[in-house]
Length: 483
Image 1 (tube, rainbow, N blue to C red):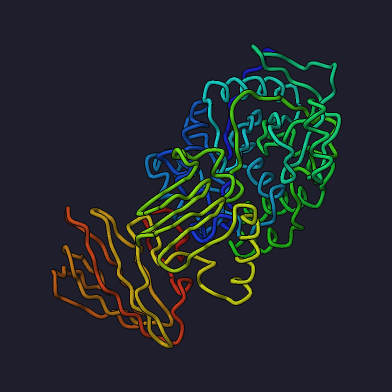
Image 2: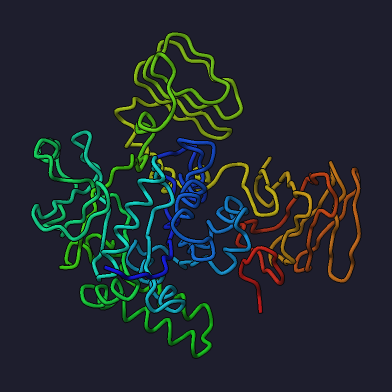
């Protein structure tokens, strides 16, 4: 196993926020939250993989709707990630996303190894993580598809399980061993999960993988040939100079398939490395007990919380004071536009609440009132038929894209700082108390040339006020522009 291949971490960051609602939203998923540390989950993940490979090797697999917020979170690596974003036009589960990433890695390095990790897990023990990656890389260089197995600590029904072959060792590094996989087991019932825990030789499937890009594409071609055919079609379209729309249409036609059921469970090359680092997928509010700091009464309290005699509860206050009395095993989460109250035992049912909101087309399932952008943020203050009022903040040195709207006009009033405005061929500065209007179908741009944060009140008018009514002509943050 004397192979030395370059490693390309692929951070899977396209998930939607459901089980951590109302703190997470469809456009502000769990990976963007601070859980189990001072950094957000995706920042923790980025720092973790940088112990194994340079930032220029990292690929972020996500979608256009979430890419802006991820760029904000990963601004410390802005230059290295210039070409590091792989944007799916539509989520098709993990197998197509991984195939897309494998094609990119293969184009960069025919012998490249991939370290595939979710963006929203908590891992404790950086040295142990790196040791596991090193052993997995040795096995992957010999064409194994390697996953990390987590030693169960309870009869968990929310995870898949892995049973390794007991006698065949593929490699070792310190206390770590690699084994061929005997079988993958779907999420079990409580009785089965108890049996697996007692048996002692089953492991939770962590959803983290190491393999050669060429090997995983070969296995996808064997077990999911339609996905590989679509990737080859996309490659040919790009070579022929096809429009982005034509390329996206091919991707959207791919049948959603998970890498576990679609490939790993069918492959004869699957291997597992049982790991020693601590791991949690932080799947719901109830699972915060595994990673968050608790007080003497076993409570996790965040924000402006005033509590009397509660026990084993989770209380999160965003802006307002939240007062709790005598709670037991409860979850309370308060945000500016939504509040959740439920027993810990029902925390998994939050997903059902989000499904109901989605069916109602309620904005509370999509995003927060304040939305972060690479240049700053905006907060929706009021909206109704034909109008929307926002507070827009632009960071020093930040500027929005040069853009146009087909359906709406805008009126800007500066309330702090000095704003520089581009309106068609005009460029001028606005100071506090000054205002200007942007007619429909007028190219415009807002920027902050100073050292003080700019705040403006923006009033939109028009028959349609959605965020997708933006045509970009120039952009500093790698977003799609009109050619």
